[in-house]
Length: 459
Image 1 (tube, rainbow, N blue to C red):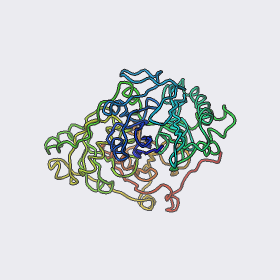
Image 2 (image 1 turned 90 degrees about the vertical axis):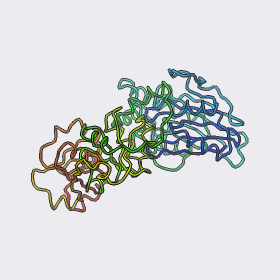
Image 3 (image 1 turned 90 degrees about the horizontal axis):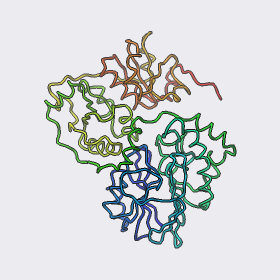
Image 4 (image 1 turned 180 degrees about the horizontal axis):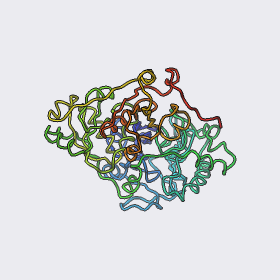
């Protein structure tokens, strides 16, 4: 058995192509299925089965479309209510993919109907003999969060999660390789899942708190205590996955005419500038907002979390960045945005005003801030609670649009952990007419620059 990992770092997820050299099973494919199909062609295998571990909450699946395109069997839990034809999977009923044996295992916790798949190869040779595809159940160092269904279900699902990860230990050998879907930066995990490249069931049995904690009630309390906010677009993913998402439209559209871009800015529509934060701060179109592209996994999650769902969206930036951003956004249902292609905003909309705001570092804050000016921390609540600038206000980035009126009229110095979220926040504040300074610096460098911090007392 060979396992090809198709990684979506932008969302912290992985999909898998599992094959015996001839035929393949795909597990949890993302909506842009061309990546999986390319992997299958490179491996010289035919996709005969496509399986979901659960109805996903953090991205739109490509499973239905991939199965139809490949004339493959589409495997979804028989207990899931969906509006498309699928092959219903019953936990415990083993099926074959070529010479591979695939056993679905009921692993409720992340969702009520969650499945894992234990795949075994009786003639593995130098390949993988057994693998566990755990979806949002057992992750590297943690488990999938249990609060995505309904508040009243969260505690019960946490108890289910405790039992499910133990069920996987009973179903698989210690040397079985573990392949989770979530946990590589995904908000679908609870707590800091380990970002290690690989692990086994045996390694997780020895190190994962979900398996080393002998007290179920203590484990559940720990999970519930560590539940944090998750992106607002999650609310739309599972219902759309139950219907069956349409194809992702990945083509870059014709660049907008200047007059149309100017009209959209004047109308207050969302124009998203993909350029780096320094270039944006130095000169940008009045009314545009900054979501810097090419800085790891932040773009997709935070744009989908911060901007209103299903409103007109225009991307502004270099062709390569616009093309990649369209693909990223299609994964979370932000379909077919328009584009203004180019890196000179003044040339894209000559009739619109160009504006700017200052950038500084922690030394600049200490040197230039005057009494009465606000330091705004846009990190999440739990990050702020652990340590923050003395006297700073905290409005998490994903709440900022709804809480602008809470901020004083004074000059606002905005920061986060690395500068990414602060860049978005500064652009939103400036768009709203606020006097803002972007602190483009690492939070861990603040104390060395002479900034006074307040730290949480040790537990």
